[in-house]
Image (cartoon, rainbow, N blue to C red):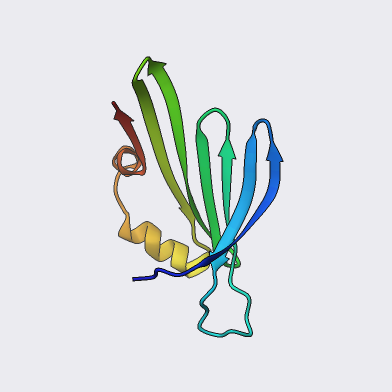
Length: 112
């Protein structure tokens, strides 16, 4: 388990939402600062998560909440990633399948 305190910063707060970031406090090498993970909350119902663990390596997620009526909502959850160079080619080869199948698993709609 990776339970640990997180270092957090709120970078901006407006009526439309807030922007912040966090990172782990436990590091393998204490002399090296860990990468930040950004988290944006946008009113009325969007949460964006983005991490850059190494230069060129990006992954993240977005959660959209759309009200449908009293006591009902639709959630759209999207995951994305970008890997540079040979690593990106390996990931693409591993996921070699038609685009519509890949998109089915990367974008999920949940209805209550």
